[in-house]
Amino acid sequence: MTNKTLLGTAAALLGLVILSATPASADLLDDVMKAKKIRISTDLAIPPSGMMDSSMKPTGSDVEVAQLLAKDWGLELEFIQTTGATRIPNVLTGKADIIISTLSVTPERAKVIDFTKRYATLQSDVGCLKSMNVKDWPDLKGKTIGVSRGTTQDTTLSNMKDKELTIARYDDDATEVTAAVSGQVDCVGTSATIINQIGVKNPARIFESKIPLATFDLAIGLKKGEQRLMDKLNGWITENVKNGKLNAIYKKFHGVELPPDMRS
Picture 1 (tube, rainbow, N blue to C red):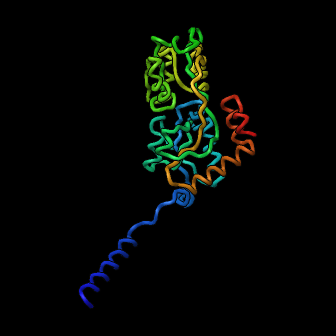
Picture 2: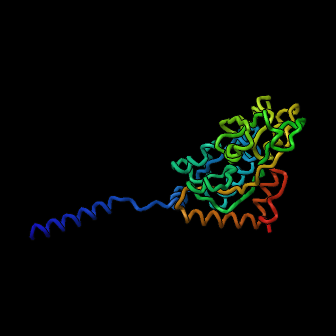
Picture 3: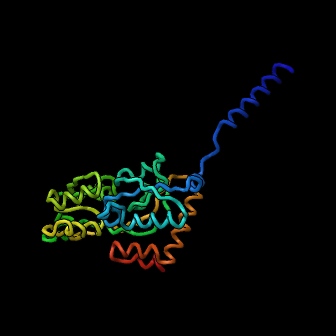
């Protein structure tokens, strides 16, 4: 053989070695089904979506959605406890497979993760002490609004530069609620459901929704590029909206049904 031929053969062999040593592109759905376990990032400190019951077992609407998914797919369920700020990093780093944790669909988040179709909705408001005369944005001047860091409420209120709002950020919803219950803040930006929960924890401080922020679609979040897992999740959501199971879970914990346009 000539030197040229030998070099060509060696290069070809080297290419084969490199190719064989390179793992095939991973498919998360295959990995999950093979492991027979799904790891779901869920905040367990945000009642009534996620919380611990008197026996210290997870419960709440997102918890039951996750449990239904795992049961339907014949998988063991592992909850990866999270906060609003760590939900997305959990899937990006492979710590969790998917997110089911009051995750609102926003354009900013869609740049870094994929979303399924919606499985629920979230009404967000600015809520304050019932005794406070707050009817519009100017009434919030000089008042501090508590939010959970990294949530859609935090982003929405922070972007309202013209309102000159004073915002206090807390690490999670539980800390935000504690601040409201204990009197550290008299207003919060959060879901209407959580606003109603404040008075349950402290009847002397009844909060009510004062100014609507937005109604957000809640979806399951997953790492980009996992189309097979996305398709399977979307099929599962469609089936369980149609058979009424997702609506029943939502009504059980939130006291209202899913929007009519979801159930039709």
